[in-house]
Image 1 (cartoon, one colour):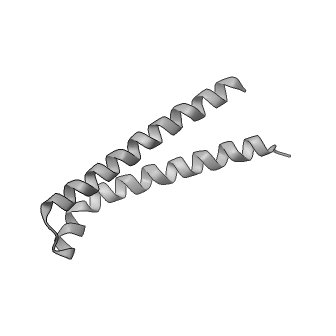
Image 2: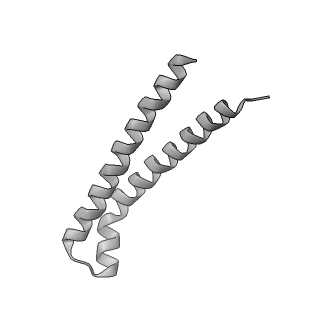
Amino acid sequence: MTSDKDKAFARKGRVTGLVIAGGGVAAMLAPWIVTVLGLERRYEMLIYFGSLAAFVWAMVNIYQLWRLRQDN
């Protein structure tokens, strides 16, 4: 049976994967979202910056997961 630590590790990995996927989808759909909603182009940049922040957050979490795996 897996321990609570392994379950937490797996959950953190899944959340990180979902954030990467969500950031990528948001970046790809940013022009379409802005066009459909009739927003100004600056909102497209806001979506891009949000995607970039998601990728940075994910990289930090990947590094933390790597360090946790090294300790085990």
